[in-house]
Image (tube, rainbow over all chains, first blue to last red; front, side):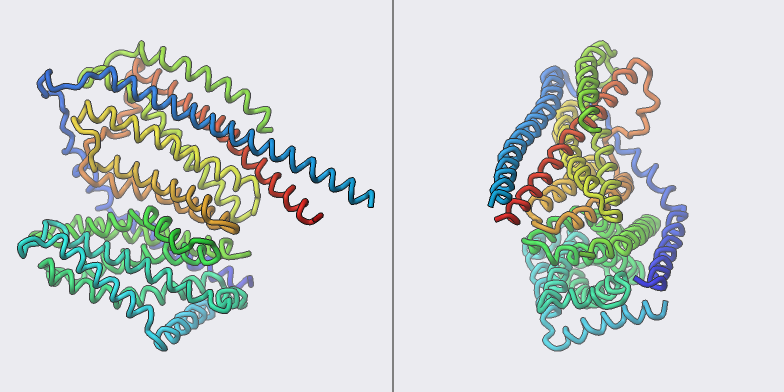
Length: 105
Length: 227
Length: 221
């Protein structure tokens, strides 16, 4: 790529960067979100007690799932690593056997 | 710089010439977009009245779907007789090639959108001509954002297996912010009394997105396309 | 280097993981939500680990794309998988908390939408790696960069919506009683993320060696 081409590319990048900062400075960008986002929060603590779900199973499930996913994922890594290493040893043997045959001939 | 623009123009002209010979992309994409809007009209217009807020969504979904179709075709064409390799071997800036392909696609999508917007306005009774320039800005920026990512991705996918499936799979998640901004902005604009500050906000967010993603695409196009 | 680092990381994550429940159980109950709020410690930590993984994915992709360093690409694959895993933890623990606090499992609220979309992008990355075939590594690196660049946009574009999800800005203001188990869990998740990252990278390394050996074998034949 020519030096001129590189300059042209960087010029485009700089122009875009200017546009970008211009938009960033747009004050409406930051004035709007905060007030629009906040007023939707409704705490649900006024539900009658008989309709409430027991919390303990939910907490237990959440932690069990987190542990299960991590352990399950580790197990798949271990399994895949074992498979690849077995294949690696197998192919390595074949390569060295081939080498010996090659030099012998 | 002039040489850079010249290359862009040459690529656009090449694409336009190919297109003018058989008009395959224009006709198929247009037909697809129209049938897309029709399907949504059957689904969302009940008893002569459209579901609230459906129009903006339908418009942008039609644009996104038709855009994906066009993106796929635009680079499929470059595969014939290894045209892409020839293009990349030319002693010109890679980003110029990217911009040329992007401009060609934008021209095509502009024609498609003209029809789609009019159709949506008709079928969903959207107040299209209340704020024509704001609508135009939203559409132009949204399409640019979608097509800038899309052009890069479909160019990258040219040499891969199962590219027809992978293009939408990769493109939609990444461009969801564009669709969110486009749909939200259009939705606000088509309210009986639009909150113009909100429309302004979505438009400037789109501009920001376009700037970042276009810069990223120009930056990554060369290393991605180098063998 | 990774091989010596892994036992250290594994030991540390075990320590954190065994310690975390103790601290979490001893933490006081939150006044409005009660027991169910305790999901928060793993939920927040899971998302922090996911953001770390996305960050690693993006940086590694940039390095691979511009410097063509093979190991950066291997790191990127590993990071993408970690991000999906921790995102999954966040996506599952979230509704379990939400069903109690909000009364519904799922809501198309800003933060939740963003979480799902991020997970989608990362799954798309893994799909590309799986089905892209030869030559898809540079393509995947491009996607990795775009995935990282998308995070702030998703953050902004969903933040403007009305949201029921607590804002992240409450986290630094938490009292020590809540803060200690929280940061303990975050540290635990970050360490285990790094440990799995290095293990997963090792797998990718071995696969590359295997491919090379196969090529050598073909050359001989």
